[in-house]
Amino acid sequence: MTRITVSTFITLLLTGCLNAVEPTLPERLRETLVSGEKEVRLVVFGDSVTGLYYHTGGRQAYGELLGEAIRQIHPQADLTLINAGRSGHTTANALGRISQDVLAHKPHLVIVMFGLNDVVKLPVEAFRKNLIGIVKKCRANGAEVILCTPNTVLTTPERPLDKVFAYSEVTRAVARELAVPLCDVHAELDQLKTSSPGEWRLLMSDEIHPNFGGHRRIAESLADTVTGKKTTLADAPPSAAPHLAFTRARLKAGESAKVLAMPPFDGLIGEALRELYPKANIGVIAWPAAGLSRSQLMKDAAHRVRPLSPNLVIIAIPRSAAAADREQFIRTQMWIASNSLSRGKREWDVLVVHPSVYEIGEVSDEEKENDELIRRIAIHQDLPLLDRAPGDTGGADDILREWLSRDKG
Image (tube, rainbow, N blue to C red; front, side, top):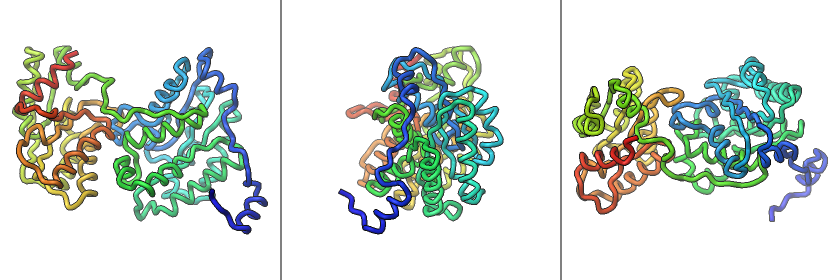
C-alpha cells in the first residue's frame, strides 16, 4: 500500500483530488462499439508521433493499431478511424486546423496527443490554454474527447525530461479540470523505462519518437481507456502484407523495379526475382558496406536512399561494421532502416537481412547479443527480416529464393 504524509493528504483533500473518480467515456459510446449497430468515427489528433511516418515503418501508427485493438475487444465494432497527425505541430497549429482536419469528419470521439513540440515552441500556459480550446471545440461539435500525455523521451537539450514531465502534468490537470478521460501514456512508459530501461529503449525509434513496438504499447493503453477492457497486440513479425508487396505489384504489372542492395544481395536479388517473374526488368544498384562503421552507414543511408526513390532496399550490415557500444548499435540499426524508408506512408519495400544468412562461422558473445538485437529491432520497426532458420545450412542465395517463393502472390 502507498503511504502519504499528512501534508500531502491535506493538499489532496483541499484540491478535491482525494478519491476522485477518474472520468470515463459515456456508456452510450461504449455500447455502440459493443453492438456495432452504428458507425463510430474516431479521429486521432496530434503531431508526428500520431501521424504515419517512417518512425513506425510507415504502415501503421498507434491510431491504426488502436482500431485493431478495439476490434480485438469488440469484433462487431463499426469503426472508422481518421489519422490527423502532422509532423512538427503544436497545440497552436492544432487549433488552426481543427475544423478541416478533425471536426469536418463529424467524429464521435477525438483522441488528442500533443506536447513534444509544445515543449520546444510554446510556453506552458499557452499549451494549457490551447488544450482547453481543443477540448471545448470538440465538445461543442458533439464529440467526446480523450486527452493523452506525451510519451517519454531520451533527454535532449531541447526536451529535458523534467520539462516533458511538466507538460504532461498540464495535460493531466486539464483532464481533471474539464472531466475528460485521460490516457496517461507518459506515466505508463515512464514506469517501463524505470523498471526495464533496456526494453524501453528498444521501443524508441530516436530520442522522441516511439517505433512500431512503442506504438503497440500506446494503442493497448488507449484501447483500455476507450473500452474499459485490456487487450494485448501480438509482438510478432509483420505477416498481414505479402513479402515485398510494392516490388511484386510492379513486376506482376510488367513494370520495371529499382533495387538498392548491400552485398552480397546486390548480386543475388535480380536473378532470384527473375526466377519468379521471368520477364521482369530489374535494375540493381549496389550499396557498398565493406569497411564502413555503423555510424558511417547511418549517415550514408540518410543521403543515399530517398533521392533514389527505389522500389526495394535490402539492408545487410556486416558484423564487421563496428559500433562503440550497445546504445550506438541500437541507434544505428534503427536509423539505417528508418533512413531507408520513405518519409511518410510506406512507398517502397525494405528488407532487413540477418548476418547469419550471409556470414557463416563462429561468433563472439557480443556478436550473439547483437544478432538477437537485430531480430528484436526488426519486429519493433515493422520490417520483414530474412533470417537463417535453426539447422539450415544453405547458402544466402538458397535462403533468399526459399523466402521469396513462400509468398509469390
